[in-house]
Image (cartoon, rainbow, N blue to C red):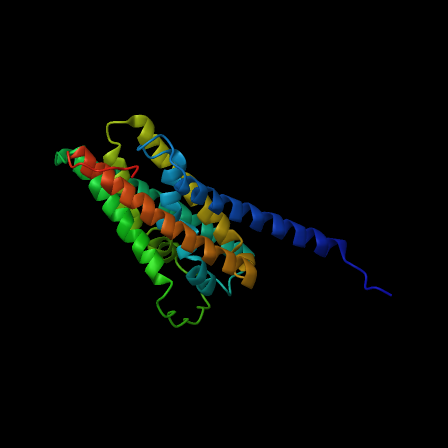
Length: 247
């Protein structure tokens, strides 16, 4: 006789698969956006979202967060995730706003800001692409205690280069309130994705999802290199240097 199937296990498996599928769809959306060309040479919302997924998104923190939280209870994991994302969001918004304010007071021109934005995201993307060929770091043993949310927020959630990217975009759009709101909205979406990733980290770290996310990270990194070079060329063109963006 065939073994009986527990309906509760079926429900749990179905819910887990649905949540994982939703996370993968959320992470795939920016890759489509980066491949497109929204609004001519102007960065659209989805392109900004794609840049933030690479610089501030969950792909960089999945392995280390899974290690340091492997012994936590579900309740401790939820609390740590919520606190870490809240701290990280406040830090990146404040840091980005302060950096943009200082840049505006220094009188940096828009073409120079455009070139700096492209350069920052280019270096970030190259770093992400080349990191795949570096030997893995030795795994540290999980601590028995609950990690500090500040330890998770910095640098797992918020990285120095992520803040630099936010500063660059806010400075670039400092005269366009609608664009600045798009930057903040994209940032909130990415932080929400980070939170979902933390809450379901044990499901994500199973072999197949982990391999799919690693592949997605590689695709996003290559696409960001291309978009960053395009931003650089736009800045050079705005400085009066002849550049063919469609050649």
